Length: 254
Image (cartoon, rainbow, N blue to C red; front, side, top):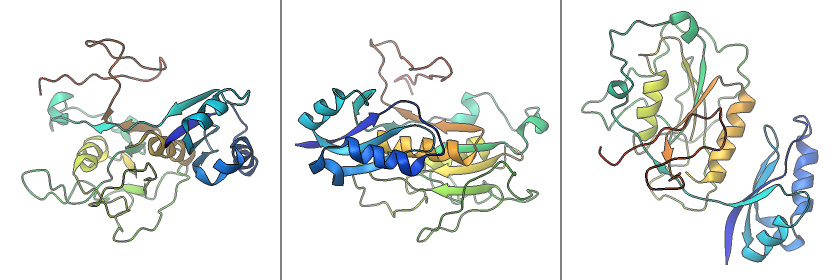
């Protein structure tokens, strides 16, 4: 039986994309070369592939492999965000520090129509008063069927879905079909946050990593992701993998 695995290979020179892809293919066993799903080359050196347990063990034993991790699936979490973070409409803002900040949201996408609210609100991502994207932005406005939602506020959108669990309701584009991504995106970079730019990147681990890589390469300032699945070592704890990552625990009360 085969499953998806993520194989990390350590540091690399960012400019050697083609050479890294060749390296990733060379590391895979001959019969597994067609199973590679993602080759991460821009921001870190890793790949995702569909492997048998024996193949994963053989890769783990190779000197080139730093770690081989089974792909996991995450749950999307959110709450009444504006109230939770204590930011009412009357809050004093620091417009200079907020201006031209590029935020990447790894989520279910985003939509002009926030259907999970009690009314249709079409003003979250309007670009009135916005100039062109900042010069530091290196992303693109990719073309997707039934999606034309980019402007000078939402400056880019990408779709990542190779994680193996197809959702029949999904339309294979950054359009939000469940409301979660629109909620988190409007909290971080809707019109209530002046001059913040949004790059929506649409939850398997390997899809999330692809979104991370694209966001870092595109030049974002802040990357936001609202998922769960890290239970920590004990019932009442959470753990993070690096001191520069903020870990927030969601309780079962609400």
